[in-house]
Length: 379
Image (tube, rainbow, N blue to C red; front, side, top):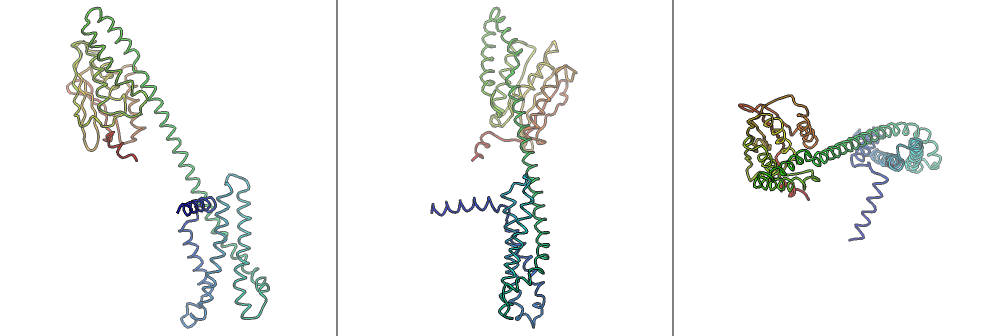
């Protein structure tokens, strides 16, 4: 059994290297053309009274035509596979191989048919071959050449389309890698000024309010515990992102005091929902920086998630100052839109709308999938 498999594997590799592209569809076309040509050459067979007399001629014409066409087809396909199209010798070798196979094919076809003539008329086989060759070779070579040219053109067009598709896939992969690199840069930046401000606040609180300083330090550790493992990952979950946003908001609440209040409404069954990392945190930071910070009284932030029409909709709503033209305010949002487009195409989007009665509502809508379901689907 192992020997049979090894032989089959070697034969498959040999066939693929020489005759790749020679399909059953091509075989069917060759057989059909040979049948039509045999009927054309032996037209009287269509007359019922002469069918018995001419049927052997039709069969012989079909067999010889099939041998001739198969010889040319195998030769042309083999040259196309073995001689790279980019080399300057490809087309000269293709034409030479075609003419050689056509010549041999006509000689074989004439030799087979000459056996019948020789038996009937007592003529020499080679005399009949030499008599038929000048008549058959130009006509058969012209017809076979046209079909071979059509095949080569179609094959080149398929190869060009495959090369263009491969180049497009490589470009998409390159874009994806660049997007992942930008994401890693974004993730590696964990807002240095936020960390510096938090550490400065910690130092001041340890001098004035040690309990508040301990709470801030605890939330900072929670923040880094969630954030650091995600630095080198391309996927995350809604549960982890919500925990990261909660730790961030707890730190900000210690810094802002009563000016900040928040609520996180994420159902436990949505904790494993896939969500690209750092997006929820970016929206939360924007709500603090551009919405609540500019107001003396601060405001409220609500983070929620729901499933709607097979989409995961994650929402960050604030009661801040609303839409304002601020320097750098749209960088994070543009980054989220670019990452969503790179990963999901048109199936995901980021919508920004006015909150009622005041503030901004940012909503990420993307196809709903869970990490567990994705892992189960993998082989």
